[in-house]
Length: 245
Image 1: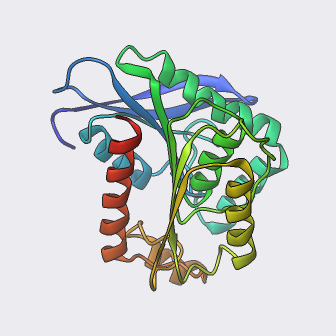
Image 2: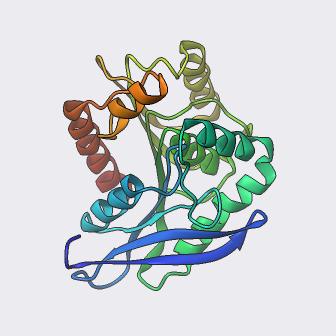
């Protein structure tokens, strides 16, 4: 871990559980700065998510890797991950409280500029980031990497305030074409400014170096794509630099 990145576990209660999210801040910087809530893949609070938080901190934001299952839980395998994820969608009221609580933690942090907060996430986390915007939270932007696009909360015009960047794998078998079409229609209906990047040949999980191995282990259509990982990260950086100006 870079010596200039300070990390700590933030514990707070929301949605019926104690959450243990992971905060990363670059201590070489001074003053208030933008902040990002970073939502996980269905695996939960793992090393991959924590690494992303540290990398984001080095870009000059306060990054909070968000615990959504409680007590910093990480799924042991795909069966447990599916069970945990389905539990979130079975009680969207509690899930929404956990999502909102992450942003409350960021807003009250002394180094955060509360007018410049965004959400991003991977897989499940992409869906939860979009859910935060659909709830009407005051976000500058949302970035989804190989995330689900279906909605669990129907926003009304004027409620969805964030600009959106979707980083989607063109060969992603887990995000149906119908969901993509519905998403485009939703953004148009709500008048949301958005960019939909579809990367040729990239499959679900293209940003995670462990995706290919896990795909083979659990018979899932997952695969890491180093080129697309790099490109989507650069696209994300350009997006945040612009919306946080």
